[in-house]
Length: 584
Image (cartoon, rainbow, N blue to C red; front, side):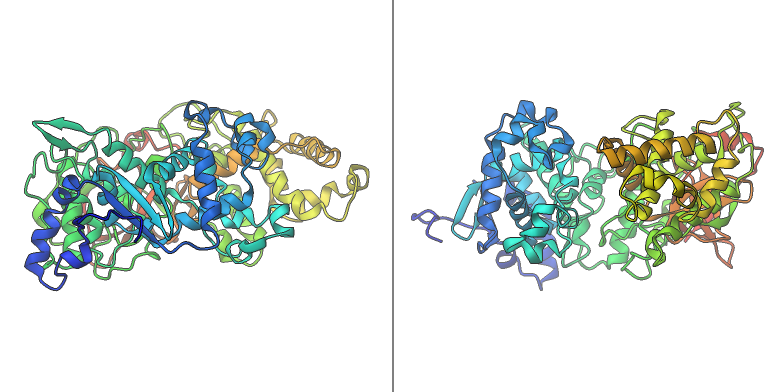
């Protein structure tokens, strides 16, 4: 490594400096790793050899780092595709090829490793080495901060970029990259933010103190990977602030011990966190059953070895859901360590109808057709257990449930979001039917097929809307005409639809299943939920949860849910009995 110092220098290389086969040594060394990183003069980040994409990545980082950070919040979201919208973006002269190079770089294995988070966060300085290319971490960090602030990381996905006309015609060296599923996901952004937080650490009695709690670290870095699943907990112990929960009340909790099984480590972690915070919010971090890899894990214990998709609903925005009001929960720690979680709550209802997910049918319209059928089965008026006096229509209940009633960080969603939803549905249908016609005049006779051929029940749903509804059929067809004409004359601008698509994605639209209950409530929950599952409002759970009854009277956790109309304690007014149940 010709760029390294010529004088003798000491390097700590985990894999070489820790005897991985000696359990006792490994326990001791892992417990003191944070001290090693804090005392190091610097961290060398070895990404591997450079390749044909590395220069593009470096060009991207150099040019973004040269832009004024104070102007980043003003960069339009859409200027990624239209640089002329922003003088700052236009001046960088960055191409899609440059950004593809950055995507490739950020997908190198180093960025996925759980242990590097502690290394990069605690090291005084960091130098990145990629073959002959050497640059300070700050160059990379600024680019990651830029794409986070501008939300451009949504664009930085090969699956999206492959549709760019320029890249379709001339993919160049990125032909194979564009066929892949590489992206700048949330993982490297959280890695960078953890280092930024660490660089602002407070000092107490000469000791550097992290601002991050263990729960926050486990949550932020759920996407990280480790060869030993237990390290998805142990790799973050040295970073966690010991003056915060759970260590504030349990200072000796979760000491690294590789004699314990993965199941024991994960169950103990869940027990410690939930008993410390005295709430059930950790249940929202349980992934869908189809994703779990660690066998014999209690259903209420998150499998930290796998990434969490979709993300917990409570991170959607400022909703502050409290489905059980301010009711308390007392943890029974002894039972929890045995894999049994005793909880209190009320059984809201049983699921009696579910929708298809998009990937469950070869027909792209089948998923939406099942969603419409579910909406059509709703009673009118919709249940109002909170006696709010509100009478939302079926269409309103549908879009508010699909978006978890949040739009652009606003809760509840403003009424105009419903009109965007209508445009969204029109857009879906038009794109199936637009090709045969070349003008709005030619298209006119085909309004009816557009309305009821692609999704036959949409027309019926709008026909059932109240006369004063903004979603009634006449309003729908008028909007249809306007949208089609604007598409043909080039004035149609679907910017708002991009935001709505983002909201649907963040709500887990492609990974959460819509459902209806016997009492007529509509909700959205885990992919694995099914007819016969029960919806419960658990004390200190925040959201409702879908549970599956077991033959022995206990329950299995299916996942969290959003149920429109019962997110703020309304279910407590229904006269339902409080019950004590056990999850296993």
